[in-house]
Image (cartoon, rainbow, N blue to C red; front, side, top):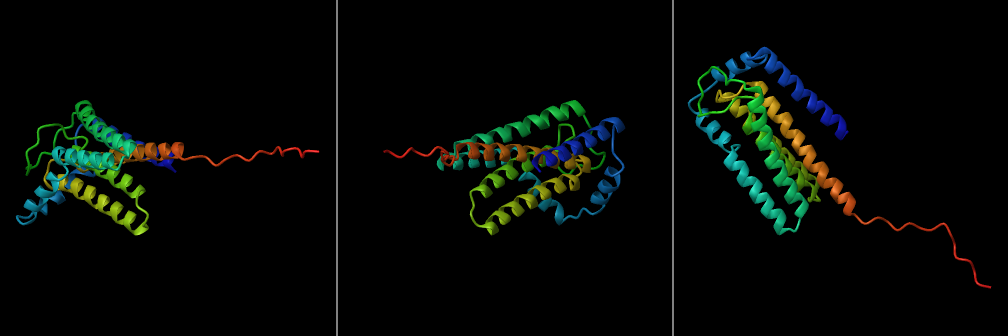
Length: 219
């Protein structure tokens, strides 16, 4: 199942990247979605969306990663701490490299927040998905109650959805930028969680093997 998910997510990223680079601009789904988002801006909603989008920025995600690493260290869970740090750095490197390689321009609409880098993929979306998703997944692994695990997972999903949609609303990302960010972030989550699970399996004591040879009775 993990391999299939990785293949699907990888295919999504490949298709989106190919579509963006070959067309050189917006795809068929980008323009109508962006136009709809811009048309539905309101004076009351915009300040709220700006606050939401800031929660997915580099500063906020760095704070989340540092706090999570500190908590794992306090709980003496060294490997989850290292995985969280690796995912955070890996997500940042992924965004930087892909933005430089693809070089996609931002949408030609009014930007409601200041942006300087290229558009593809969405850094806010990728970073928040990778960091928050990984931390939530690792936390869920330590929770015994199923309801608690579901609550943590649902909160993480809603948060990352809100971050991605906020970037479209603010006019700084095409929808395909956000989709790529979600897919790439999910890849980092799977990589991190899989690494921790394999480590746990390796550290779990194996059951003693019973010998088929029975001791010979003394005469």
